[in-house]
Image (tube, one colour):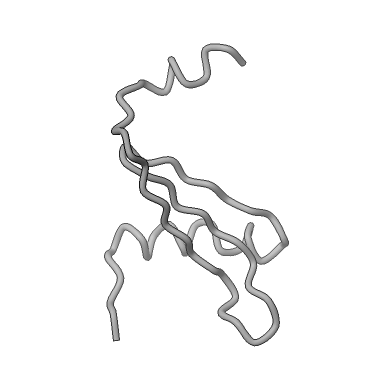
Length: 68
């Protein structure tokens, strides 16, 4: 069985209640994203999908939200 890191465990603990309510959570990383979705019947309660980016992002939070 594959183990998960403490960081991923914390993400799941923090966001699982939100995901179980039917919301999708997308977490941006410097080199990819983690998407949390509610599992269908017969699946785990929270589905985790990791998608790599082909370019490393080098922006700050201020830059990211500047247009909002």
